[in-house]
Image (cartoon, rainbow, N blue to C red; front, side, top):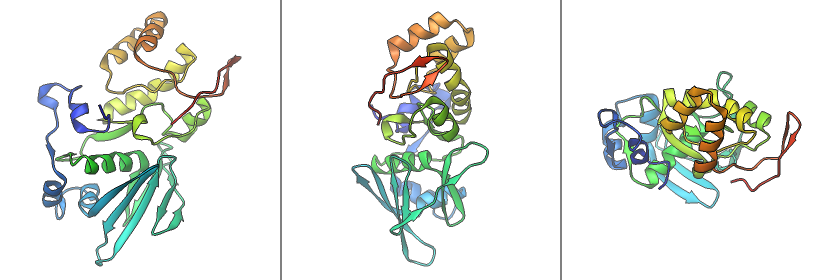
Length: 231
């Protein structure tokens, strides 16, 4: 199942915490004049076009003109045909895009595009974020792990803010234990509990049984890893 659906996230949540979804048209009616800056920005999107390596986003500007943002899975962005210099969030070290004084992290923009294409959006985006499962959304972490940043949908998932923060803290801990870079889910509460035990053997076995190591070519502590294909 596509990880970038709210229904996929709901499967990991208690019934009381599950998120109500609406169609894109209903979302527009709800948030065109109300909601957060992000939700108003999403409501101003006219359409999203799927590309082979990203998305083309058509946005209605306040003055009636149209802005076209193209975001690629490798993180490159163009606005109205001109290459855009991504901004690096000084706190999270993730790449951001600005639109009408509204700043959005690239992986979340990809997640929003997928929601629109599947016509399934959360009624509100409060408390939600998109996790880069191999940790490469943080450009410092990507460099330390020796992997390229990937915003491919297979590497992304909707999650809750606290789970995303836990994933960010654990990604290098997991590498230090397994000596491998894994694309793993922040919504995997079983893994979070096993990591809390600090039992290296259990952690390695769980990762071996449930996840596949992703591409790298890096030396860490004298280890040399084989380069594998990466999205």
